[in-house]
Image (cartoon, rainbow, N blue to C red):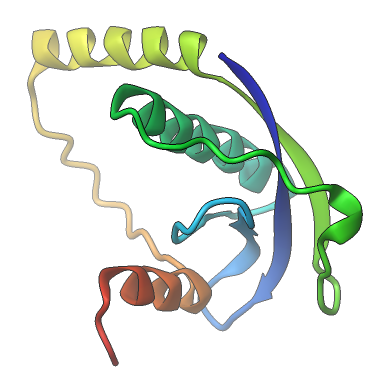
Length: 131
């Protein structure tokens, strides 16, 4: 199926993370983020596809997208539309899974990965964990 949903992009200017957080007001989920605007939009599309595919496969309700005019944002945050195509995404995930089982090796890259304080707080809240 094809979808379009609004997303709120929140500029992040933290000590160890500068980029954008992404929140989907129509879904009660933690959100995602990107290192810059392009990365945030890419991550938002991937995340939205993941949310919607999960809902389709598990027979969960898929809400109507909120009207952009009804979404209020603070500061430098802004609203944009993100599209999803779960048929293409599902085929992509299937292909990735097939390739990963063929290779089945551990990635030993020594890169450090950080998530923003904004996303950390949202993930803890989603998991019901208090700091």
